[in-house]
Length: 444
Image (tube, rainbow, N blue to C red; front, side, top):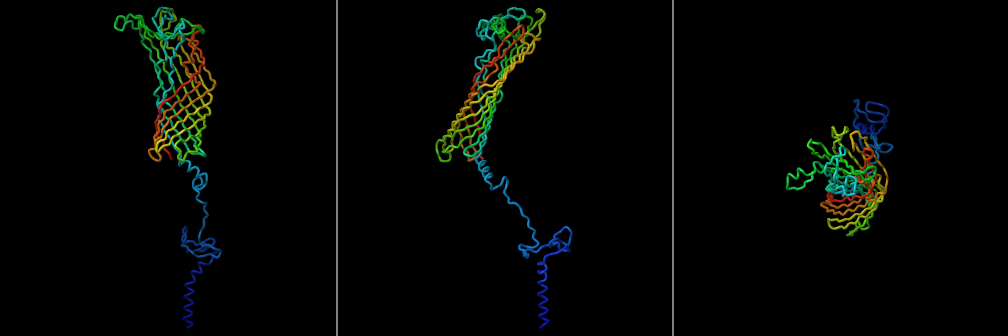
C-alpha cells in the first residue's frame, strides 16, 4: 500500500512540477531566463514560448510585456471641439467657378489731339501744310477713340465660402483677359466723287494729323504723319493707336446668417461686411511715321513718332451690403448690392519720343497720387440645384468705379521751342463694368 501511495504521490508531484516552475519568479540569467524572469529562447535572437494566463504574486500576468500608448485622438484631436467645428464647417463649405463675359466703359468721344486753331472739333477735316517745307499737303483729320469697343471681354471668377460662427466667410477673385483695340489709319484719302475714278486721283489726300498747342496756346501747327513720299507728290500715311485695357479684383466678406435660414422662410435677408480691391489699368500707344529734313528740304528721312500714355488705378477699402434670397424647391433667386467707400492710389505716366525731329530728347512724365475711390456693385443671380452637392449658377453683374483716371484724358498735346513739350493734367472720371456670368457651384 505504501508503494502504491508513493507512486501516486510521485506522479502528482511530477505533474505539478512544471506549473510550480512557471510560477516561480525568475532570477539571474539562464538558458531560458532573461532579466527579471523573462523567458529567453535557447537560440540567440529568438524568444521562447511563454505561457499565458498565469497570475503573478503582484497581480497581472507574469512574462507579459505591457506598453502604455496614448489615446488615438486622430488628426487635430478627433473628438476635440476644434476638430468637430472644422469638420462641420467644411461639410457645408462651397466653391464656385464662373465664366465671365463683361464689358467696360468705352472712352466715348475722345480726339487724340488738341483743338484746331479756331477751336473747332479736330474730327472735322482741316487744311494742313508740311511742317518742314510749308507746302500745302491737303486736308487732315485727327485720330479719335470714338469707335473703340471694350465689350465682350472673357474672364474667370472663383469663390470659396465656409461657415464660420454665426455666418459665412466668403472670398472671391476675378480677372478679365486683356482687351486690345487697334486703329490703323493708314492711306486715308478724300474722295470728291465716288463714281468718278479721275476725281479720286485728283482729290486732295486726307492725312492723319494731330493739332497741338504752342506753349499752351492754340496753334496752326499740326503733327502730321506723312509717311513716305513716292516722288510723285503722294504720301502714304502711317499711323496706329493701340489701347490696352485690363481689370481684375478680389474681395472678402463675412455674411451674417439670416434668422430665416434653415427655418423654411421663403425670403431671407443677410447683411454683409468686407473688404475689396480692384485694379484697373489702361495704356494707349500711338505710333506714326513722318518725313524730316534738316538740310532745307534737300533730303528727307523717315522718323517714327511715339506717344505712350498709361494709367493704373488701385481702388480698395471696406464695403457693406445685403444678400437677399428667395428660396424655392431647387431654385434660389438673389440680389446682392454692395457699396465700397475707399481710396484710389493711382499712377499716370507719359512718354514721348521724336515728336518734331529724330534728335529730340525723350520726355518722361509721371504722377502718383491718392484720391477718394468709391465703388458700387450689384449682382442679380440664380442658383439651381442639380444634385445635393452640385448647382448651376448664372448672374448679371454691374460694377461702377468712381474717381478713376484714364491715359487719353490726361495727355495735353503741346510743343515749345521746336520740340515736343507734352504735359499731363490728371482728370478723373468713372467706369461702368457690366456683363453676364455662368458657372458651377460645388458644396462639400
